[in-house]
Image 1 (cartoon, rainbow, N blue to C red):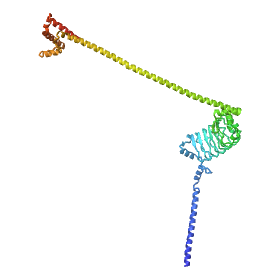
Image 2 (image 1 turned 90 degrees about the horizontal axis):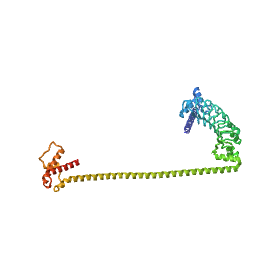
Image 3 (image 1 turned 180 degrees about the vertical axis):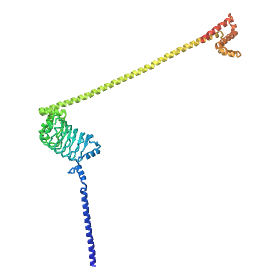
Image 4 (image 1 turned 45 degrees about the vertical axis):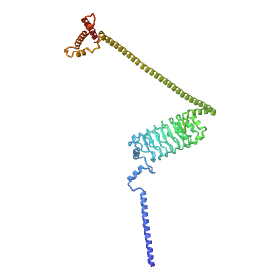
Length: 445
């Protein structure tokens, strides 16, 4: 029994040993595979050459023509190199400037935040105006002579210890060289030869020499100067006044502008010290107060003039309204007068008509006065029609009809009243009545 147990105990031990050996072999295989994956792939020589062209021996990417075209596509620039006037190559990790020969139309080149240690291969960039090389590994300014139209050069945050090789730039206007390793007047002596240079940023360097003021004084067009962060600002007595007095064209110093008042007081201080400066300050205060008073008075005059013009406009408007009212009143009166005249004319005409009618009525009443016992009679024609219904008058005019009716009327009147007239024969009476009646008819016509 003991032998059997010993055999059983020995069997699992052997099994565990085998399992351990297998695990060790598997681990070795996995380590080999990992090491093989981390190592460069075993490819042909041509592939090695291609990888060497895209990167440097230190592993930095190279500025190859292919890579430049890819960058242009990414930034939506022209794929044709000659057509680009701006090229953005910042934050790309380049260590060398190269393969820019075809980019002849560039006016601004951005090479910020790379690993560039030397300025080179810019011979074909004759049209370049702005070159940005801040935050690189530059230790020297060099190879800038082809850039004859360069206006702005930015080499901040590098390791430059001396300003040199920039006097060959005839139109250089702005130089930014802060956060470098400039120390004394000799390190910036090149600035005195740059006649067009007007903006210089020397902040946060290691300048301690007060003699830099003499170098800066030789720059005829210097207008903006920044020396903040340098020990020299504490070593120059009356730093701001001294620089303002020495640099005649300066308009901006460090973080503040140089106003005409500042310059006048600085020059007064240079002439007679503190007392002269106080006098100049008082003069400027008086001038400022006078200017303020003049502006206030001018505003008051403007306000007064505007009020006066407003009053005049109001008065004119009132006068115009009064004129309009008068004209309207006159316009209303004249029609009334005309209407009254028309009414008077109508009344006169009516009176005349009445008189005419009265006259006519009187004339008509005259024959009836003779025969006052008789009533007024109807028109003769209708009367004839009623009195002689059986008698027809055909083929006669209205006048003939009237004449016939008149004769009949006269005869009827004569027959009825002929005996009442004394001492007058009937024929004379008929003739007189006929004449009066014909006269009335003529007047009516």
